[in-house]
Every structure is written in structure tokens, then in C-alpha cells.
Image 1 (cartoon, rainbow, N blue to C red):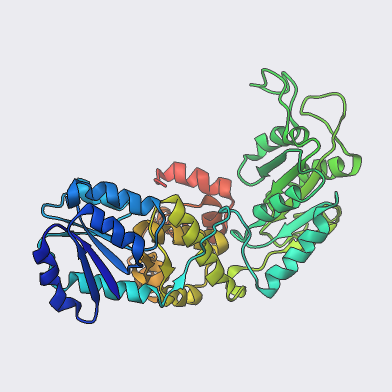
Image 2 (image 1 turned 90 degrees about the horizontal axis):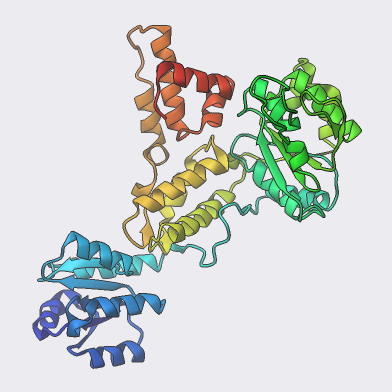
Length: 440
């Protein structure tokens, strides 16, 4: 390996030589000489004194802006927190005090060698919401989306929470002839039942207490575009009837209105519920189900997508490394090993959150296992700590509080996922959180 030392102190090079046995060490004592060596050769590591020719920080920023792959370690006689933070912001690989701790440069070189044996993250990073995957299940989804997109057919997207149903809906919209129109989403489970009808269909002035003027609903706002009805499986039978009429007649009535309003929208619906089971139990209208499922797409859960876990992890690490300005270039293979062992009940949403957390907690150019959330790195220990065996009796209220806190903790405060885990409606969960004064 080849190391360049930029420092006016000739003695530092002589101090480092014994521990860099087998490493080619070159030194420059002036800025002119240093720039010449930087331009002439490729280096595995540059050691740069902060006071080098009075331009150490300026040179660090220049090396970073030039986009060179060479790691730069800043040396300082009296490093401070402010200096370290500014150096890292300017792209420094590390900051070391002078005299340099024995063996530290050698450790850095070994780390650089290790990075070259690791899996690099993608260099071109698409948007966070890009659908990523090459598994057989996802290839089937891609084909169905491609066929359905360029039509006005109503599409029903099925899949567990966090599998990316809204992302698919947005792709269906963007690839359709309605792409120039609006994409209007609404989560049917997130709005109280007494407000949902007005939110969907709008209302006239005086339709109810507080209706001080006409309100245009989501159906009308989506004119010439796409209306995305998320979590439609949570809708009441009464509202299901009105949705069915809107689909059949291509018109709606505002709450308190006396006349029909024609609509021109494409409907994409989604749910994590078993709608066919709900139909059999009388909780979902069969005629509405068939109206919605003209084209039905089922997104596979992450645990069934095999190597897609690796692709998603790399994608999100690359995306969040750029977003949070982290110098990550590679991911240790042990990280992928831990990812493959995790069941991912929260699917793509959960792995995205886990990778963002890992990126934020990272401290170098390699994402390592200890950067992962504890429940992913040590799933058995996490489960053991949550299953203590025989517990002292507590009130049902206290037990309910504990279960809500645990569900919120496990889903990173995602109310929809937490409600699913607890087997209750999201609105019920909201009410209980407020009732018990639980912070989330």
C-alpha cells in the first residue's frame, strides 16, 4: 500500500516507518511538493497535518470536492470537538492527535484493505421510494403493473403492512395516461368514520355542525388523475355502499348536497386485510370486492423475497448515506447475514427504518453489524428479554399499557403496524394512547 504524509515535520515520517513495514511511505514538507505528489500518483491513504503550509483544512476540502477515493486522515497537535466535526464535514476519514498513537495508522490501513473485500454500496442512488427487487415474486408484480398501468382499470393491491402498496399505486399512476393529473391518496383507517365520508365526497355549507362552507372531497380533487384508497378493508359497510355507487355510476353526492357530481378518476385500492375472508364473514361487500379487483396484485412479504433483502439493504444504505452525509462505501458481509435471519414483520418499511438507523449510527466507511438496531442484531436476546416467564399479576389496564408500549417500540411508533400487532383498529389505538397518556 502507498501512503502520502503531508507534514512539515520530517521526524513524523521516521516515527511512522517502523509500524508501516511493507507499506510505501512518501513525504512532502511543502504545499507545492504535496500537490505535485497528489497529482502524479495514486495513494491508498493521505496523512495531512492541519497546519500544513497554513492550508491544511483548505487542502482537505479540495481533496473532498475533487471526489477522489483516497481516504484523508487529519493530524492535529491539539484536536478539539469543533475541529473534528469540521474535518468530518469536510470529508476526513479520521482525526488523529500528534504525536500519532502507536499502531493507529496501521489499524486504519488494515481497515482500508478490509473495505476492498467488502460489498460496495450502489454509486447511483435513485429516490427512496423506488421499488427495488429481483425475486420471482417481485418480477411477477412488475409484469402485472406494466400491463395494468396503461389503462383505466381499477386495481386492488394486496399485501402485508409495509410491503410498498402505495409505491405500487404511484407507479401505476405515473405510467398511465393520467400521469399529468393528480395522485390523491387517502388512508381510510386513519380518519374517524364520522369524518371519512366528508373527506371522500366533500360536503355542502351547513351539511352538519361546523360545515361553514363547501368542501371539495378527494374524489373531485382527483379529477383526471388517480384516487388511492389505502386500507379500504377497514371501511364500514355504509361507506362501502357509497364507494360502490361512485364506481358504478361515475358520480358522487357531497354530504348535504342535492345533486350528483360527475367524476373522472381512476381508482387504485389497497389493504392488508383478507378481503375474501371479510366477504365470507359479511364484513365486506362482495359486489364492491369484484368492482375493485378488476386487476388484483399481491405484494409478497419481505421474508419470502430471498436476495431482495440484500438489494434493499444496499439501496437504503446508499440513499441514507447520501441524505445524512455519511462516508459509507461498503457493507460488511455480517450485516447481510443478520438481515437474512430476521423475519421482518414490518417488511420494506421496517428494513428502510433499520438501515437509516444503522447509517446514522455508523462511524466510518464500512457499515458494520453493531450499527444495526439491537433487535435485528440479537433477535433471540430481544425475545428472551421480553418473555421473562412467570410475571407478577397486574391490572388489565396496566397490562394493556405495557402491550401498547411494546407494540409501539417494536414498530418504531408506526401506529398502523402497532394496531395490526395488537389486533385492534388504528383509531382505537389512538384513543387508548391518549387515554393512558402514552408518549409516542
